[in-house]
Length: 362
Image (cartoon, helix red, strand yellow):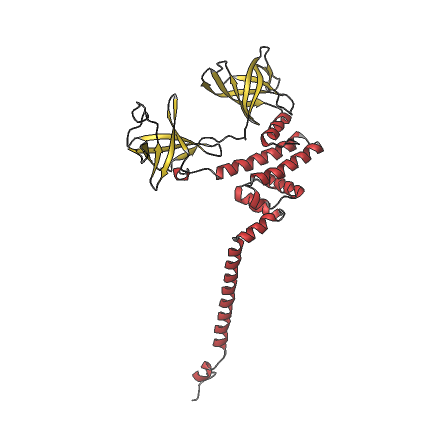
């Protein structure tokens, strides 16, 4: 076999340990990745277990918890830093799991408010605290918002509007495609009664004090097993939330005074407001850091400025200028929705503390 330059016979090549070594190494690597995958799945399953979640809820808040929450609900960097500092100072339990727990959140923020107030910090620091609390509450509210009439429980009431009437229709049955509502005896024969197959708008007020408008269609009228007349409507995914108040409000019944407003324009174009001499009596029905609702027997129209003075128990007298952004008449009383135009930071913080019950001793 002159000229043959091979390094070995085919039999010797098959007996070489190299191919088996490579195959064995590949199997070992695959096995390691499989074990890692199994461990990963077990860890993921454990992290979803009630025992793990409860353990995480009870531990103190760490920076990584706030960072994860900020990413989840889109907090700004300034809000995340403030939230972490509050949780750290007040030794709050894991905020990532407890941020939507109203009682836990209020306990932490109230303690921080009292601490800052005793320290005598500027109004801006207190306002930043309240704005963060308010922002978290708005996010919670929006996350709880319903998107379909399927989410409205049986026994709740929908409202049909036929000006000036507001007719309550109670939900007695909810199926896959339709809802059955109980109607008053005279509803079906009234001139404003919607006909079968026509579109209608219904209002719903949730337990979270949110108002929704539902666009749906009438299917038919029928008699229930109890002999009462009913209206069957289609379920709807066209549900829009109407109540999107920027600030939380507190109900109250407090006498107040109000007057017209004088405006003075400064050298640089700034406007200052002051009350005119004639004062009138009214009643504050609710209040928020951004505005209030005032009841009066005077027929005051929208887009007018008024000066309001009111004393809420435990707080200094509030004096501020507001703009009437809405008016509704109820019998001989006019309900004015007022948006504050000019109010001091100190008074706004006091309203915040009243609305959230953060004042010491409450």
